[in-house]
Image (cartoon, rainbow, N blue to C red; front, top):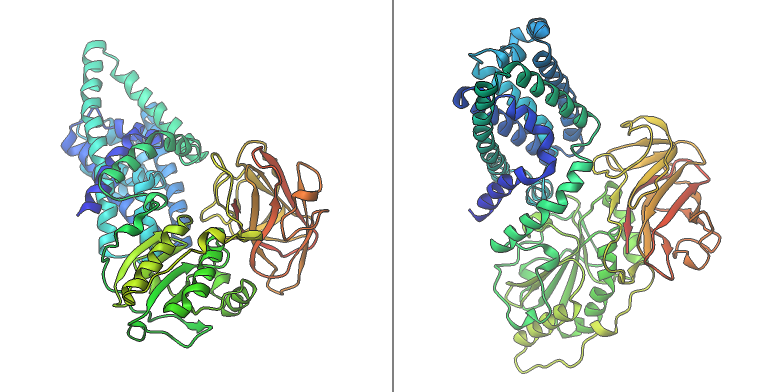
Length: 576
């Protein structure tokens, strides 16, 4: 119930986000008409369409994103016609003729005294298609959980609760706007001009949405205002940000979080025969959810390895559950090579179908679950950090299993990651994880705009913080971009100590040579572990490559990687 309340309140808070601004003209276009037959049907249609689109996004991934884009195009055309009809009454009848067959007559009926419920509902459906990409942290939690754990009736109900919350705040705005609208008409006699002003506002909003302003600039601006409010709301309701869930010294009290789920469903086990929940009774178990191209997982890995080595003889069993983020991480051969390269000797379950992930109701990489000798989950930790606290949990659970046993000293303080496993040191503003495939791409300045799943020639000149882009001939897919001709580049204006790029060779597996520059120069002493001082390197497998490690971090820099051979596949940037 708490989650439904949270989702509803998160929707209510949408009204204070600038991301909602392009939708308001369509809402206020009904402000001068009776609420029950105009405003309410429009809001119902908007909420229903939002729930449908968001549910499809959660269920279908990339194909649903494309479907939503086609829906947005249709909605833009429909609402542009609506705005033109408001501006030009003489054209209204002609513009609405094609819609007679399915009962809309949207523009003409919007201007008539007896506007129909059907027209308002249709307007709401179109508006819902445009509003669906505008969401805050609370909705992000719902969609992430649905995408990773599988869709369900509960997911749709959570999305509906969010949409109803937004509709509630918009309804209040509409009622107030309606009074203002009527007062203007009565006192000033400018109803015709008001109608035309609404039409102009609709066209401006359509243009803003078509140019991506609603999900680009406005969504970024909205984070400054609404994220703080939403995160405060989550904190009050006891649902914390994963980065803030664990504090130093929490090992003092260990709750019983329920029985350990079954470990059924992995496609194979590496370094071990299949392990079972029943066979682990009497052992203290650490379950580590990870994936081999995840930089956060790699930075936590030295501690997990150290715990397995130090406490394995005392009854600790460490299990790595490898749950992939990218398709190439489902290749068992890739995983086997990765665990060999990373020096992982403890058992690894290859969870390609997310069955163990869903059994634990997990949402994060990395995630650590601590299970006692009775098979009960006693503690969990999401993300990097608090390694000393996690080690104290291990020691306490081992002491519970072996009364009278004590442990002295900890390895957490002595662990030091090398290469890509080195802990991040930069505080404050740092470039975020950035996906290159169109399904999750943000802040790209590539020109022209992304052409989906077809080869295209791009240019880019990122000059502002966190801008990036492609140059050369690339085919951009939902998950990655593939280079068609040698000489292609990727550029990024970044701030961090480390810059990593997840990439791999083409389908033929041939190595791809590349050259890296920082601010137009060879990296020299700032080269990452996969690059020499001249900036040269080779992509020979599908993994995370460390390309930059600055000796002095803090300033912004222009990164360029040029590929001397074709067919490289690039997935995402991560930073440290």
